[in-house]
Image (tube, rainbow, N blue to C red; front, side, top):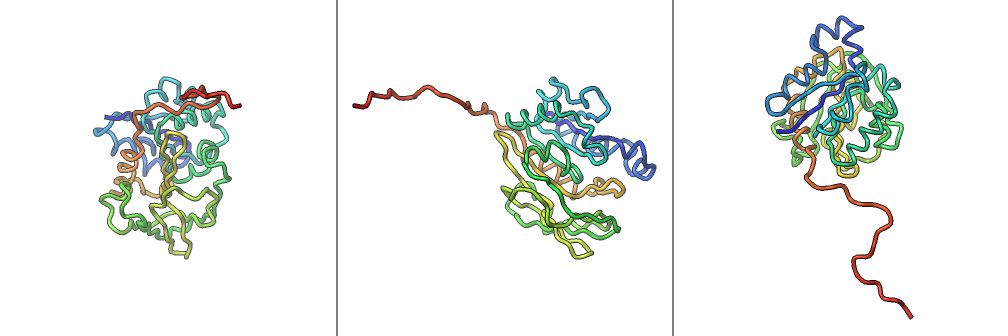
Length: 240
């Protein structure tokens, strides 16, 4: 059984009654509801000391889920660096929806992670473009969401190690909506849907993708490679 930590900035739920109605326990509470049981799940939010991501919490976390939107800049650079180091050591990271603009995702990608967007209550169809990938298990050919926020290309990210989902929107745009990366010993999955005013995280197939992603991102039982100046393995004989 893994230890999962769900991080949510938890601001929309406090400011917007519509979001509170959809997610009465917060987005983090909804994510926890379908992940707990199979795993030990705890939550952390922006306004807790150290954003709830203390050294003790991060040390025991196998996979970290991250949702943010309004307050990316309020996240401490010190905490971001601690999370980055844990990813490099092997902790899995699942980056959800508007967390594409989070400090942690941008520092791990090394790009702006910018994109086009529109809120117009339009249909999104997420096509499975890598049916062999374990994150797609149990999904079928696509996921259709009746209403979602549009994200459109160009999405300023590095080319994914694996492109798992490609979204089409009613207004005509497409978007790389399920992307995997490896950084150090850690695995990262970016998953696009999840706008706060839509009940996306109540969708069974969206839940299945996130459940699959948590399993895929599980850390390996191996130490991080050693870097820097290294002694020779074999004897180096003097050259004449």
